[in-house]
Amino acid sequence: MDAPLVLLLLLLQVSMTDAALKVWTPQAHQVSHSSADVLLQCHFTVMPGPIDPNRLKVTWTQHGLTIANYIQGQVIRRPDVVLSRETVKSGNASLNIMNVTFQDNGWKRCEVEYGGDKGQADIYLSVRVTPQVFLLHSSEPQSSQAKLTCLATGFYPPDITLTLKWKDETLKTERLTSPSKWLLDDGTFGARTVSTLDVTVMRGSREPFICEVTHSSVDEPIRKYLLKPAVPHVTLTLDSDLQSSQANLTCDALKVYPVDITFTFKRKDETLKTERVAMDESLFMWPLGEGIFRAKSVYEIDVTAVQDNGEPFICEVTHSSVNQPIGTTLRKPVPPVVSLQGAAVLQKDSQVVCRAEGFSQPSVVFKWRKGEEIMKTDSPQASRTPDGTPFAESWYQFMPHSREPLSCEVWHVTGVSERKYATYSGLTQEEVIRVAVTVIIIIFLSLFILWWSSVGLFPLIPVMDVDGVPRALQCTLTGWRLQLVTVEWFKNNQQICVDKELTKLEEGGEEALKDPSEYSVERLPVKDLCCLDGNVLRLEMKTTTEAKFKCRATHKLTRRSLECSLEI
Image (cartoon, rainbow, N blue to C red; front, side, top):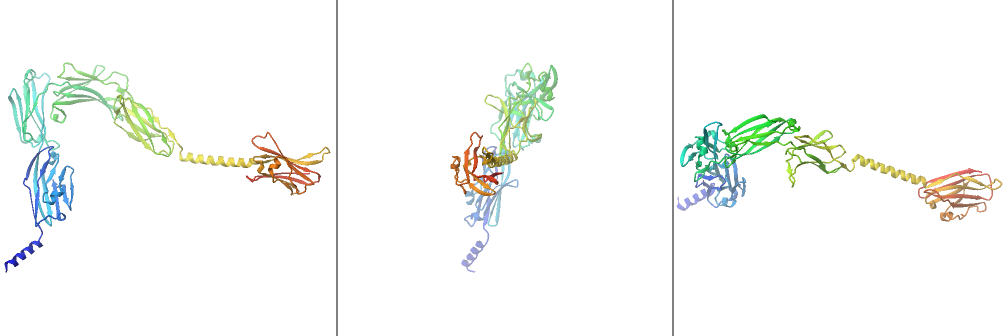
């Protein structure tokens, strides 16, 4: 076969197969200190190039969990790591871990997929954590021996060397390679070495005692000097869950060194409890730093013992830093002053604030009630006003639909406060309906009174002449706006006259009649009527015959009509 043909077949075979992938790291084991940044290097090449981002996938994992990946041009990562999208496209999949912690210790895997090929590189990151170092001493009462302890906590890896020195003399050296009994919850380690000395040597020495720690996380040994005894700061507090009849008296000593202290609770010269706290195996769990520690003792009492006006409780602390016990007294708790602020508006979102202030103990509990039902229980953190007065507030938000009593009470170690009740404004839905119905009724009554009072007609009476013969008929018309009232006269149900020009009638003028030779009509104003107008309606008759006469008055606006009749 000719050489050019063979070369052509080989090129066709390469083009038809998947791309070749190679993944590697120049440093499979890396070391970093905690809180530092570290770059885990991972590189890859594909043949033939260049790299197609759409066919590329990069995944970083730790303990089987994904911490960063690149797929289809997008990067998804943990907040404390960085995987560059641009460098990945050029074959650099290195991962930057920021602010390294001990949890980053262990194996990491860089896995690359491209065109069906897979490759990976494993990197071990060793994180070194610097130990915290303390130098302590303690002694039993009436003992001539004292213990000097060099303590180191929170370090990794576990190999460490502890050395106690005095006057450039090594008292004790201990190299610990696997202190499994000191494995802490976070995976770091703790270790200690102890040397026993004569008490008089320690008290009389002017040369410092030194704890020297050698560890791979630091270039130079860490040195701690024995501190002088520190006078503790003592406080006595009362703690209660406010739901129980029992409470705890806590005597707290801060800045304690050395850790050998005795607490004594007293009342009325009676010793209630004595407790000695000294250094033990769990000491490293509660240092405050710089060799200073905290110790406390608790005594359970009945809440009523604090609420009465008896003798106060006292805590005395005995420590080697002072010649006399340090005493502190529990002051009688001051109850809170409770107030309710804000108003509840019916049918609207409302907020009411319950405020307690001026109390001596920081713990209060607010209870909101509707009637007797507890709606909310709140235990906010107490704050202080600019003048130092303690206070606490609780908010209750709701939309009231009725005037059901809403109250707030405050529970305190001194007892339960008087209930404070919220005030309501506005109207309930039932009250709105009631008011609307009342207004409608008033309107209808007003309209009825207005209609009824628009026209009043008093009985028709005859006016006799000297011979006792009726010569006229008259009645009294009352109402309002009488100019709108039409007056009609009838004889035997036949209309004989009707008002049309009302203004002229008010002036006493005469109306044209159907038979003017027999009748005439007058309307005379009447004064001194309360709230109403009045007219005297008069029908003059020139001849008298037996007949039934009728007067009708009709108001044009209200359509109210009245009539009166008389037979002659």
